[in-house]
Image (cartoon, rainbow, N blue to C red; front, side):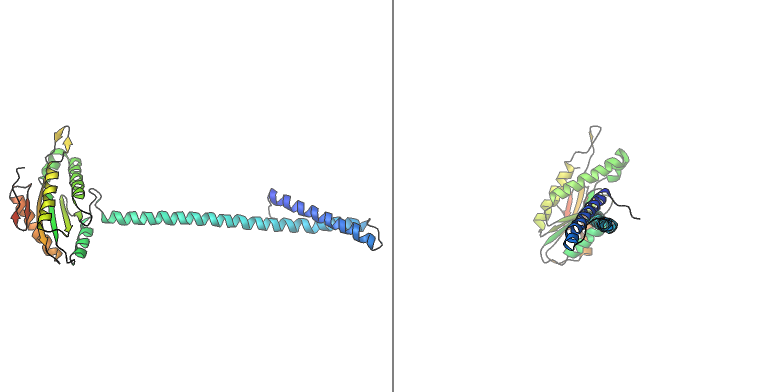
Length: 265
């Protein structure tokens, strides 16, 4: 036996009652027309037959209909849940993809993503520039103030770089305290202007520990290209200029092999 709901039982009872009424009405109308008397076993059969047939049949039909509707609603609910789970999975996938490209500390591209993006930009016909910025005396900052302060110093540099670049440029953190910037469409004058803006902003930043200012500056090596370039070679040249800037006293810029000015740290 199947268990029926109150609603199904009510509907089946109504249908059964209507069936009994219809059957009795037919007997009361038809039997006299045929010359008989609507009483006795014939009358009770007109009551009993609908009860025996209509009651279980209608109960089964309404139960099946109710079951189908309930299953349809359950399928619709599961479909909505599946769509929500798919949307959540897509969002998680996009987030993981983004996290795999980004340096979690500074918000710049990670090393692999930066160099892959640089390779893609190398074939462009427009002028461009590659800047390598390295935090000066970073080990001393960590040793003196602790690694948490060192992390904050790197975040400050990252925010400064992001605020300095244009919409077509990109940047990344490729080492502990080493950052690389690519300036799309920049000539030497623009590259020098961006480098100086970055150097000056970092030198003027305020990272404080118990009210004391943490000395923070960057040395920058920069190389310019008038068109297509070899990413490895351009990076090597910019890295040489960074080394020259460090050797010359730090907190300064060397571009295309020439020091752009001397700044007292």
